[in-house]
Amino acid sequence: MMKAQVNLSRILLCCLLWIAAAGGQNCGDTVRGPNGTIDSPGFPYGYPNYANCTWTIVTEERNRIQLAFQSFALEEDFDVLSVYDGQLRQENLRTRLTGFQLPSPIVSSGSVLTLWLISDYAVSAQGFRAVYEGK
Image 1 (spheres, rainbow, N blue to C red):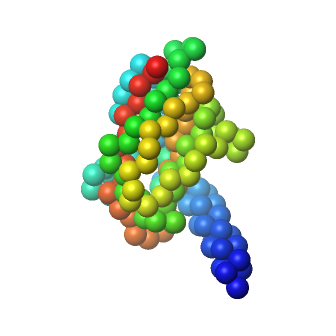
Image 2 (image 1 turned 90 degrees about the vertical axis):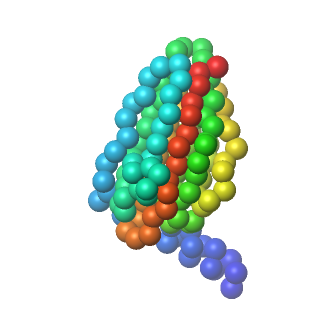
């Protein structure tokens, strides 16, 4: 019974992410430079429903990127920030973040790091603020 609930939860999460991606409010940007800050839309007052935001951080060649979160609050299990080591491709997926716990810093293996925020149709939280630095 427990395994069926876990599988059903994963299927539901995938469906919600697909719906949000298909009809979402697009936002995000390509961010260049040795360092900077990325805020979810509306931070700190809450991100919109159906958000579909992609930020691609690009630093100088041969640099790695350190991403550190200063604030993090996403509706647990329904709104997700996926972090990709490189471009937005499934094989580059590094981690999926959700909930209210401040994530540990993330260091890329190269000069590109991509963040993809997807939110569902209801309930949002404060969002996130992350700072990045090329190393």
